[in-house]
Length: 561
Image (cartoon, rainbow, N blue to C red; front, side, top):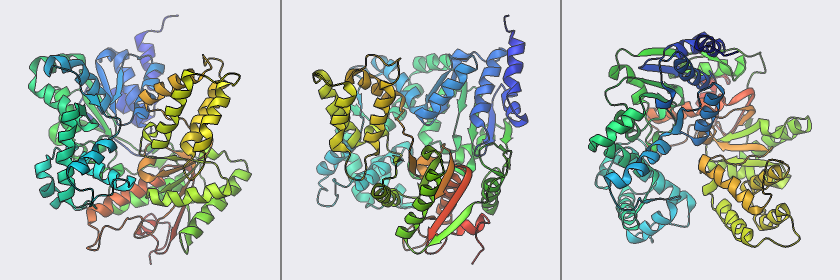
């Protein structure tokens, strides 16, 4: 029996709660959805697109659904396919911009399309040399180079030119750890080097595409004809250059739906700002505002504590939990970091012995350095883990080196050896030291593929093709192990049981120099703590050493001192 559009539309709506249904019914923009953690925002916005397509309000081929991670874009595409609208373009802001830039480059700029760099590190290393700062900057330090890259990325997405960088930094409440004059000099050298090598970075993609659309009338018309309806997820984390690009895509039209949560604004260091979410109704006075307030992720006990934290500073949408009751979040104090880690691992060991699946557990921390101590302890105890970092999995040096070895071996396979045994042999030198999780995850992927009848040919080359597909989709392999992650890297994820460590003054909130920490910085640290709390579905265990964080008392989890 053929399904009528009306029947299909009603089926789409039937899967939603009242608030989500209101989102789906708001088929014409402008629409602003304030969606708290675990309220089903992806469900709401994908069903909105599907419903609008079913009733003929939107042409799904002219919809551009924007997310901030390839993982989120992939999830959105999967949901839209299941809802009968596979033709919707669900992409990250960067990938949508890159696609347009590559397509129109010959027409607009002429000549060879620049190479998109995989990593900034080689360029920044050479830029330090050209800026004659090798005596001041330790280029062998990953942390130092990451700090430089972060500052340059902030400047570019905030549309701050090298000549203006020092002055702009002076107005920021949080200063970089490296002298602004040094970063400015490196920034100049870095931009010059890119031009010389005909290379562009991810920030250039946004800048160039924005300029192209603004200056080239014919290109702008074609793009605006291609995409007429827009959905933007995680709108609280939009940067000035991303908003500029969205403005160019949208033009004078108003068919835009944005989704965000002010309580989860945690990327100001990368140029993100909630100002565009907070001023949406100023730009679109006629906008419909819809709030999602039913939480489907966490127990009422976790939700109650998270709401109390929100209430302290009126920073977001309080939620009503729909799940069954569970345990109240626990708070444990320890004398030092070693004792804290030992206490957490003792609890995890007990959970694993009781049959808890390791992939249901996560340890979250404010900084990468905290996680290194956890890694050492887990390695010494033989506990399985993987590190989820903000660093792209396939850009990690150990992963790149390993895959290079696999490519070399794939040219001339070893006689009398299975491809999986050969993969294990190549991996052995990498399975030592502290950080073995990346290689272990690739080995686990190999074992899964070998047992998959659909995986052909069962060779190293076949394995590399699967990896290349995952690189394109930014879909790293995972393992049935405990996850370690910083709070920034954990955003958008969830686990049954979460151990949030380091909830102490000076760590969370993180100290910001000897002059005191500005209120705006404390507010962002509070939002970061909120993100950590709301990753937990069933059990939340918080720990500290030294002076407990003010956020614990604000959340009603510890009496005020």
